[in-house]
Image (cartoon, rainbow, N blue to C red):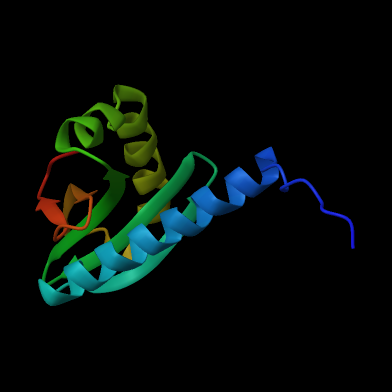
Length: 127
């Protein structure tokens, strides 16, 4: 049997790996939010303005949550850009227009940072 060279990673393979890692990070963040008493209403909610990672509610507070997984806190903070903030806010407006039941709730834009293997860091109104 002839030896084959190792398979080269394609851009498609890289995209799939990143997507898997993103889904895993959002799942971990959702579990952390549940432990804080939130009920998850939506994950990876797509709107014409963009995607919302997690929509959760606790009592009268509705949270639109952005999840970032990076090696350091500084890298997580750097990944939260002004364009990203604006995108989440526009998407949240569309989500609220579609889900009128939650329009009277207090709205928050939160962050969950996953740094290495540590416990998720939840930042209320951090977005």
